[in-house]
Image 1 (cartoon, helix red, strand yellow):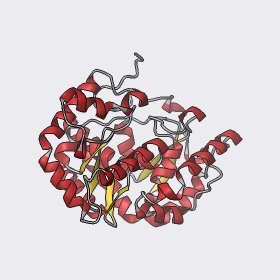
Image 2 (spheres, rainbow, N blue to C red):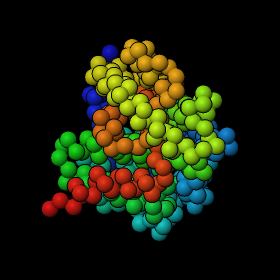
Image 3 (tube, rainbow, N blue to C red):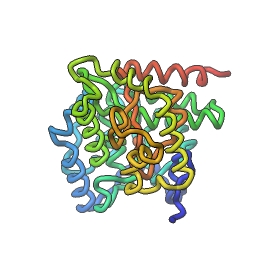
Image 4 (cartoon, rainbow, N blue to C red):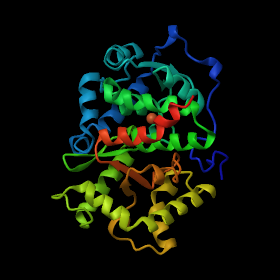
Length: 335
Ligand SMILES: [Fe+2]
């Protein structure tokens, strides 16, 4: 087994590349190769399809209009800042670090600096990459960052993180993971994708959308009635089994068995089998969709190297904001 097996926090094991080679204010722009621009164009085209876009939340689409990303190639940092800073006050900075440790990252975050890596995935990672590359950073996050509501959400994490205990920091990272990275939201009485990690990964996006369809197909959710109330009811009725599955996910992480996309693909189905949980209803799919809940999220690690076995939905983005506040604000306001 390779040595990059994550500890069960789910963090990427080590920071790649020497931070002493970091970009400065003067050298933010890079000349990308023709092949890198071509990879960008293919990634862009792979997600920018009407049958996928209809499942992404409205705010991302609004942000895409505002940001006007070039489908054919990688935008410059100056171009991105011209469209983002006047709208939300945030600034984009290039980093040489391929995976920034949370402590450094949150310090930048506190100063409203959003880091984008200079690394772009390779051709063999077109559908899944465990590392957040610049396609993830730019295409997944930056359309949102043109808007104040998203800046407000992002503004919550760093002040709390910097005052939190080690244990709380882990919870904060999970809350960020299951909201801005892998969150879902209800809009127009449908489940929509909000998280940048899903939006920027064609395979995880498709897999998530397939789950939305399955919930309707298997009569778990009746889409002609309010969907969030139904999801909440399923969650309450199945809480015990959900906890068993979360314990199972934790055990797999600790054994290092959540460390590749291949392993992650069938995790949930094999958990049902091993735990003797009937594969039906809310447990029928390859990903379990549950209401966004701090207590549950605190118990489930981030799955970085494989597909997430569980995703969480907020009734609206206002609700997401309020739930995040309920945990983060008291910590941020500590003396
Ligand atoms: Fe991200």
